[in-house]
Image (tube, rainbow, N blue to C red; front, side, top):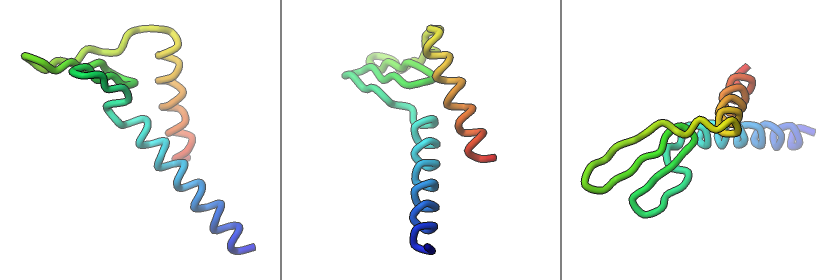
Length: 75
């Protein structure tokens, strides 16, 4: 029984770490000199600049759900 409880705790901690990493990481999609993530789109080349992610409804809902999942996981 103790081993099962330990396995569940390890699984939950692993999922929590992966949730934080996937929310915070700044390069989900890298294509040459273009990097894109949940919060911004960056372009390197002659100069480096970042723009906010597009205002698609699905992207805003994903952003909201990621923030809510982090908050509820901490609680």
